[in-house]
Picture 1 (cartoon, rainbow, N blue to C red):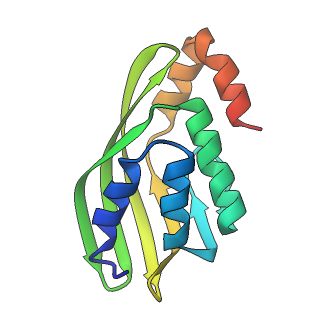
Picture 2: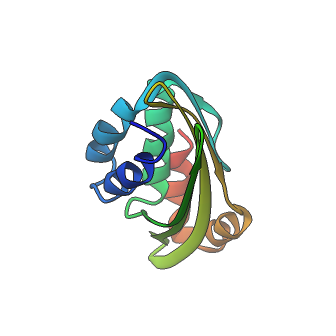
Length: 139
């Protein structure tokens, strides 16, 4: 996989059902020693922790979708900006994310996700029906 090919593969992965089919598709694209960093979750290293990170995310937002809107690739770095949507406490939420991926030897070796997590955190706090999922997602 080249950096130029990755945005299409990313979009194909996000189109799959969460979380098992998504992870079955995504993990082979990731180096076994990769690091994933994103707001509201601890840094994940390696396939097991990365799978746990996504399972926690989908426990909180089981119907989450990410639709890439813009991409850029230069050398070994790929940026993908996405519009995300999900249901939180029976109400829709939308937010934007920019992911920065580093590709080395055809695999993702680093991902850093950038978004403003404060609005999502505040929405979670204001929606008591979302609290059980939020607590489960942290396990």
